[in-house]
Image (cartoon, rainbow, N blue to C red; front, side, top):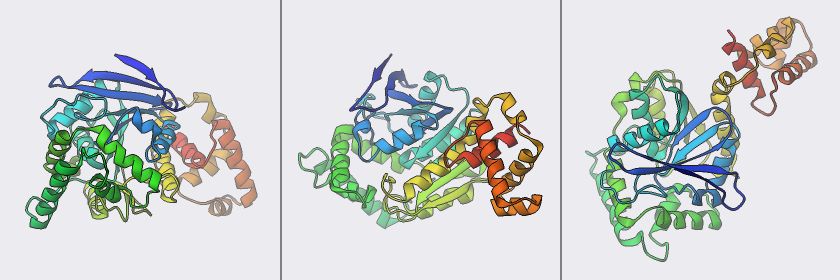
Length: 363
């Protein structure tokens, strides 16, 4: 079942539904163009309401420019079934599996963000052949140290706040969570996230979902992951401490950590960290974009000198170093790169990384 949806001038998305292993109906949506990118996102979402969001809209638009984005509302949230009792990690992984299968994804990249990170890690461990690459954004391997009395007491306080304040008409209690998620928000952004919490799920589901997430621990799976992995985490994240992102990168073989200069758990559109996020994700996904459709003749159209330039760029050399190695002027190197980009049909800030990736993919 599916239906095209457009909200407040947003690009069209195709909203669909599938059934998880236990019969729970999961809503998912597809938008954008390029290689597939599946989002195992945070639990507070609403596939249609998010398009109106001053907090999420830029995320959806910018990712949709570089990939075909498949995202879904977790069980108990948004447009998915609310009448559920099981919020454990195995059930949530089964939901992701159902979405990937229903969307017809044979091989794809994935973003595991916030509480969706452990779901993404568990899926990657179970289905290594289906993932081309994994992005872990603002997430963790273990939700909470159950042996830490202070952590346990704080978690009990949060759950009590949800019980007494989630459904109240005023946002006093929900604002506590908003301030942790986006302390740098404008009044409009904070107000929208306050509203999303009440709209995305019920009080009962919020409590049950949080209890289920606090049990998640995928740290033992991290050393066995074989998929190329990029970890992005805000240094001042108040919801999920930066140290947990650093731990992910340290435990996953070959993973690279990018620290974002932000205090926000959700990177906002107007802060300097956002273009860094976009550039890093775009460059990381470039090999998928290359394999998805570079004309075979495009690379063959490069001259020998252009190939020489591109190989040196691929070694991480800047234009001045390339010029010195090939006895050229920097201006000549720049002209060669401009020609390479034109022949390969590349534009924008990620063109350099994309050109290198295409050369490497061609062997």
